[in-house]
Length: 176
Image 1: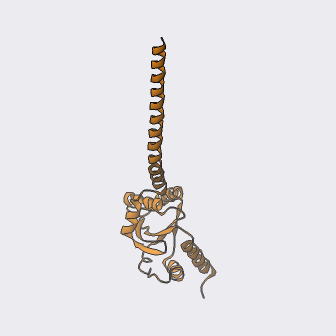
Image 2: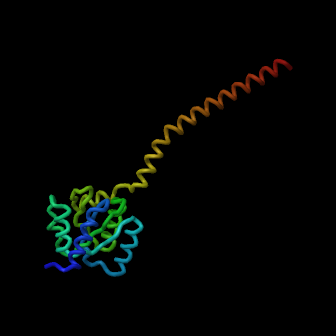
Image 3: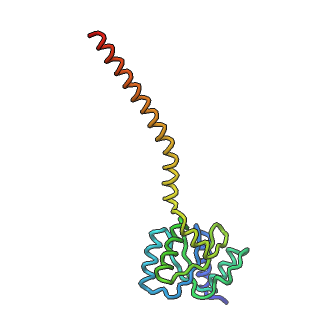
């Protein structure tokens, strides 16, 4: 009979799997305690967090939540999950950076939009612009035609004022 702690842990992992923007499964071999603190801090800035899980409990939870996916090979070796609450791109950037800097926290795979993605896809996602950067690009692109129209209209108004001023000066010269 399973222990209550293990049952609670499986329920917690299932909740994590269901309530997020995306999950990145990582191998945390070689991750030192101080580095883990730094990683957790950067992940918090990105709206994410790191959780080390037992493979057997993670596999049980994954089989229940993602019954149509075969995740068995992911749950081999030291496994941790990086959970993106909001922005998977920022989270993937942090994982990729620490993977490169520390040679630890190596992405194994991920689940995004209830689809499994490989480690190469996680790297590609990390290379995308963040959500905020994309929104800034969108706003600037939408703003550009409006700015052009305003410049054109103000130019027409300015030219009209100049013509009227010239006509006024000419009429004043004719009177004098």
